Length: 72
Length: 403
Image (cartoon, rainbow over all chains, first blue to last red; front, side, top):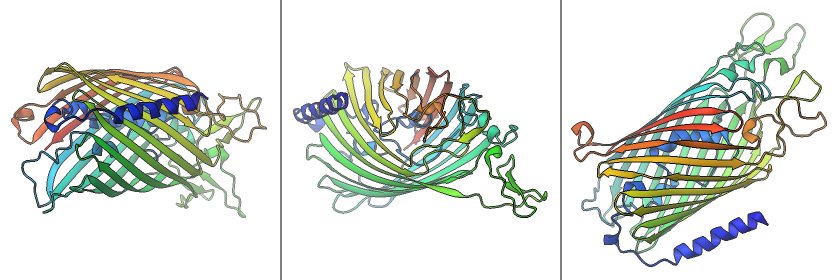
């Protein structure tokens, strides 16, 4: 039941976000700022690696989802 | 990498000059230094040192060209090399005499076309190689951006075909006696005959396959906010244990090799939300819910707040909180029962919480770093990590960006 609630919340948020008003290209000076990028920063790459190796969960962050060992 | 396509910073619609020849557009040099210590190594059955140091270096080249129809073609080439020293690795042998060091090399190539109608697709291949583990992967991605460039959806499918070298703890290697020949593992991981000659013998390998589908939707909400929803569905099969992880059972002094199920399904759901407050402060937020077929559930939440001291300098404190439940097959040292089918004492699969906090400094001088015009950005990131298992770590990441 808890899983269903979490997934349902994501779907509701998804619907809310896609129903947003249109933003024109000339209004995107802040959206285009490099700190606003929706991907992880390049400098985050080493920490993403050790987190995926030392924690049970991984994925849903745009990084790799498999491959490599990280066994030690 | 997939998310770079979702960032609304894509300047395809604003570029004043579009190069028809293949052009090196961007180079990133990413280096990392990581150091950890703890007392729950899986190599020694959930007890023993986890001391580890790792140095990583990655070079990432992006080439771009445009055709006469304003379609954009990009090639990403990446080469990474990691070198680690892990104290626990020495204890793959019984006496602690195995080599504690290792090197991993991982090249990749990705090709992508962004059509003038907003459609994009791409292919990629990668490999990763280290002494006891080899991985080959291929991916395919397809996506579409809306006409007003406020909405983008992308799908990526990736397959990893891995090989695990069955490097077992020395005392658990079956003594294969053929007439007078007995084999065992040396400190360097070689199979050696009892005759004294160090004959390199091929160590068996086991397969591990991973198939992943990733769906991402990004949306500009208003002129200050954008969000991305990210879902992965990951299926793994094959040898998902590691052959040098020992497990000790209640009342027994001898170990067995970790034994985990041959399949695992993972399902993470992520949400990124970035908000620009005023002119100087940005909130970068991330939340992930994760569940898998081994019984782990986790929540990850992070917040990073870049503060723009000037247009060329930003300082970003960050904090990440993580919590997970234990896998069904985990028990600490000597707490497993011999009757159990699956067992591990790897604390990565235990119940714990972790915190990671630090600061990121990003410098983007107007005329380039050190007045070198192509040297666009220096970003340095330091963080301290601690788990309730006792594991503590420090990490430094540096990105030098040229474009």
